[in-house]
Image (cartoon, rainbow, N blue to C red; front, side, top):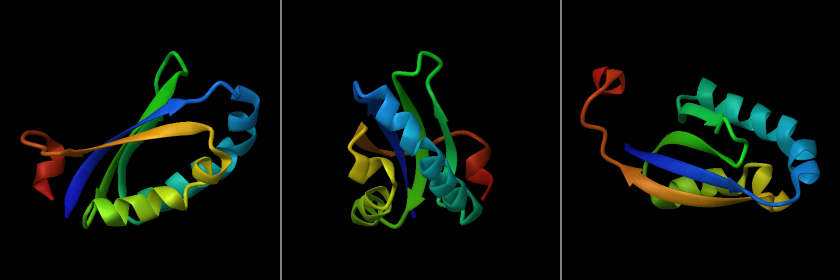
Length: 93
């Protein structure tokens, strides 16, 4: 499994994003329960968010992101970076 740091950059339509946010958070919660999302949360300045995923590969991750309610709502840009974790508690898996 690969790990990915995915940065979301929120678009200008805050009202639309906030209307979709409950569905987005429900979806992310389901991924946490499945062990797919390791960490998730918005930046303190509310300009975006960071989500750490574990997926087989980038193609699988893109399918996961496509199913996120934020994607069809087009309220954020998604920037995917594969991440090689060298130190930390996640290495104890």
